Length: 613
Image (cartoon, rainbow, N blue to C red; front, side, top):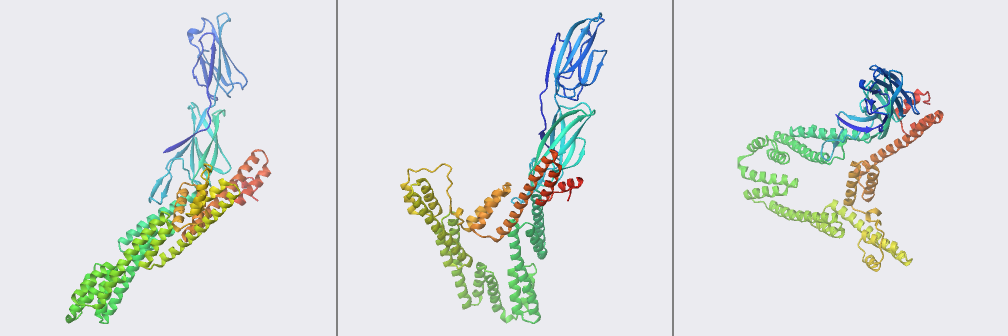
């Protein structure tokens, strides 16, 4: 059990004793309101045949309660009712009834400090989609719309019976109380204010204070965490089903997992791999079914071809035996030709799956048995194709590296070389997009350069320098660099922010992804408004259907948060009106808040007031 403490009230104890002799002793040296105070003298200090006469007088407060003499007059007890100073007088009287000495003591009782604690029986856990594990949250992280236990304790300990009374704000529900513990619940994130007052068994107020409990995790985040955790569990079950060769069920479970957590890249990438492999499995199954039909029609060569293709696409433990049986059905005199065809057909199966290295291996084995000019020509084409593909991949990889470094012109050259080696429609589209980005940056840089010239003509050299620097930020501009050199004596303020191409909505898909990653980090830190701005900025630079869908849901969530905030503001204003005795105005404002955002606690309050309509 973990406890987060809040100090509700605190005060210092003041005790002043002025005695003619040090005859009177205060038993409890730290007096508190509502707790009995005891003064005493020793028997040896009372004159022979004499006595002690006690009296108590408040200076400005109430008369103390439960005043009594004990131990034959040697002890004097009473209970302070407030924090005002109390003077106690002890007159020492001899056997003739004469006062021979007097001792006066003044005490200033204090109220008890009330410590309020948030009791965490079980820490909140949220799913970390990046690590795929449960993340135990800090004790200070509290979840909206769930019971939160608050415990109140007196400091120092009160020696008698006492009770606590809890009061919450209108947005917070008090669910149940058990002695010094109470459960609260707030429907949305924000601060809940709890006021606690302590009383002794006689109803005397021992102390009072208040604390603000911040609830910082919305239920929507918890529900999202639950979906992501469930998605990961489904994905693990899908993997188990796949290992058990229950492929169709594995794909179904994986698809459900993707629907629950579409932004989990490990699941979505795994799902794509499942789909690819399942397509191959389905293709292989069809080939095997077709092989059975061909075998029944005594088309043994074609049946054997299908079985071998299936074994390449999706191998089974039974493949070797089935292929061996098919081979036995082929006439002996065609054995050599068939062996050659088997190797060549296997090579063609690999070839059709773009598995070219394996295809070359089997083609070479096939023509080693029986020469085949067509196969030899195909092998030469494959070798040339592999060389071109390797070069294309190399150029594309170099282009991608240059693009990430912001060297767009050099990246464009590498991408062009890649397309020349191996035409690729996707890369061609990307080249066109990149060329458009470069053109737009050049135009924007030129526009900023022209603005700088105009400002320089007007002697606004500082603003002109800013435009020239922004120009080269957007795209290298030698004219702008020469202008900067001319203004070398001009200095920009230290807090000057220079715009870049992204500030003008000009960027590549890589730029957009980088900004989206920054937005993801802000989102994980709970900086929702900042994250939303970056998501919008990423989408404006390079449109992304998945990001667009996420952005729509995120904007809806932000609007929900804002409506809750607006409703809470009206509720707080209504609370103030209600406390000021302006009941009608308060009830009207409570009803207005329900139009902005529903609130079950307010609805219940209005029903109790008979003002729900």
